[in-house]
Length: 137
Image: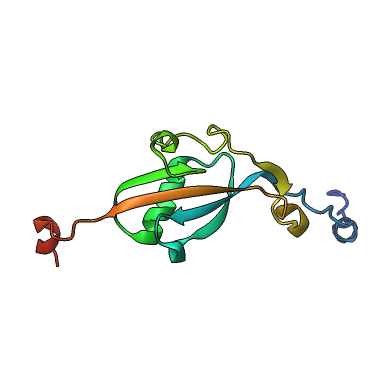
């Protein structure tokens, strides 16, 4: 009885290894660079790149991680004024009309073309004399 011929697996595996794999496609997205500027405290300024689909609550979360507990956080693009204040945390950077560029973020030359926008922010320090906070010291 012939139970069937065995196939040679080695040749197929070698052929797969010899064929060069194409490079992965570049990660192209719409990017914007944000300069975070804390009012009256220049040494706290910093910059980060974001996709234009980033929501405002993400920016607030970054500020909370950087500064700790914040009360009455106010964000304003371009200039710190009441008419520029952003109150809707679900808006994206694109929704706000901020200009972004479609680039491969890993390409250094393309990354240099990302536009920068200023985000001014201010907050009130947490009230540490609050009896509830004092109790947990």
